[in-house]
Image (cartoon, rainbow over all chains, first blue to last red; front, side):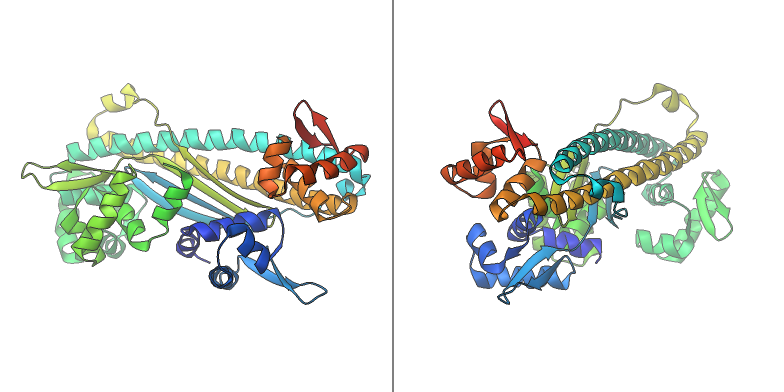
Length: 209
Length: 209
């Protein structure tokens, strides 16, 4: 699945409700329709879509009734700022089971597993805070870059070229596609900018400075 | 804005394309329509929706033509697994400008800012890896909990109660709303489970163990 497909799926409130419900337990279609107060036909359509996307799977119980559960371990991240719109989807690897935990007596285990989860959630929050701090500094630094680019660029095409190259080295063709500007037009700008030493060639790519 | 509204917004391909374009530079409506090859009326509808949600803002140039830019600094994260469906939206704080960087000569600055961003992006990737590792262990531990819950629960309602309490302490009312089970029904189960010592009362809340 691609991130665009996942965003299309998550863009529907009832599909989000279905995933929320299935995350608490596997459910029959009739249960889902009842809990969401939505017609069975509409629910079926959503379930089929989720199944085709590989997010859920159906199993059959002893009475041959179908029930559904979530199969995926997906993480989607979207970051929107004045200088960036990034969408990233990753499959989260689940580590191999720890034999030791499974060997504990059941009741004691549940409590200790519960404490373990709480510790992990706290740790996850700290790491997320660190991540957001870095993201904040990146956004701030990109803001500085915009100021500097406005100073060094003679026009808005030069500015766009520099801004595109901030994302990484690009060759002429990629740059042309990225900016929607024909290569022969770009060439004249690039030449001038090389002379000004605001960009330079690195093998086939162009990079900042 | 709430995370559900953001997911609704991001669930449309053309809106994603508009945000992608505005993240590279502020644009006029006509530019957006041309680049996306979509009618001006449809683009206007999307822009109005994005503006109402506070994600973009319009400014006016010298010729009184409106152009749009992204105003938000948002991070959205969705995590889907067999045991969880979590959606989290955060506003990313942008740190105060560093006077030192702005004082550098412009051309040299752009290159040093570029290197700085590359370092930060690398650091961000490491932190994200750490985050995903923790998320993986949480998912795995929740999987273990499900196994243990199946062992200690006498029926599926007991299992659902225990699973709900894994997310944190809950009082009877919250538990009832969360599970869609009336309080008087829950009471009987809770009493039995307290005797079995799989859950206990902590002031008004119930917790695991």
